[in-house]
Amino acid sequence: KDQKIGLGLLLETNSFGVNRETRLAMSYAYKMKLKKGVLSLGIATDGTIANSKYSNLVALEPGDEGFLENSSILFTPNFGFGVNYKINNFHVGFSIPQLLSSEFNYVTNKYEQVHDISKYSYSLYVGNVFMIASKIGVAGSMLLDYNREDKLRFDINSYISFYDRITIGGS
Image (cartoon, rainbow, N blue to C red):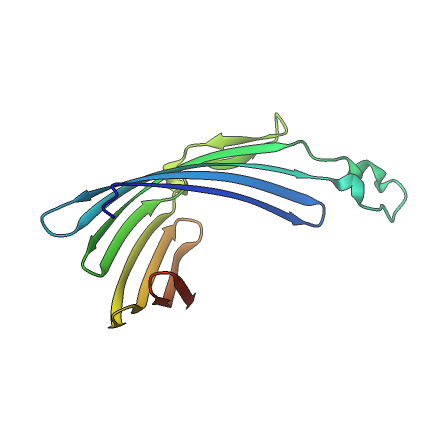
C-alpha cells in the first residue's frame, strides 16, 4: 500500500475514586516521499471532559458536609503537531504534543486555557528496526522530552515484531 494519509481516533475513559475523565483525540498525518526517505507531517487535537463527584464521599467530621459539593464539569481542548523522517528502517521525529495548558483562575473559580510557549514540551524521537529474519524485526528507540518544569525526561524502548501484525515490547 502506498497511502499518503493517516488518520487516528482515540476514545478513553478513566475513573479513579470519585473522579472521571473522558478524552477524545483525533490525528491526521500526511506522508511525502523524498529523494531519500519519507517525511511525515502530523497534527492532532483532543478534548478532555472531567468532573469529580464529591457527593459520593462520606464526611467523617461534623461540618465537613460543605466539602461534598460536586465539581463543575471541566472541558480542556488541546492541539499538537509533529514531523517524522524515515529512511530505510531509521526514524527521527520531533513534536510539540500540547500547545495549550490549563490554569486555575481563582477570581472566576474556573480553569482557563492558556497558550504559553514557556509551558511547551518538546519531544525528540530516534529509533531503528533491525530485521533478524524476513518477517521478524527488533526495534530500539529513544525518546527525549524537555519542558521547563520537569526538565529532561529520557525513555528507552524496544520491541519485537512478528509479520508486522504482533508486537511485544517494553519501555
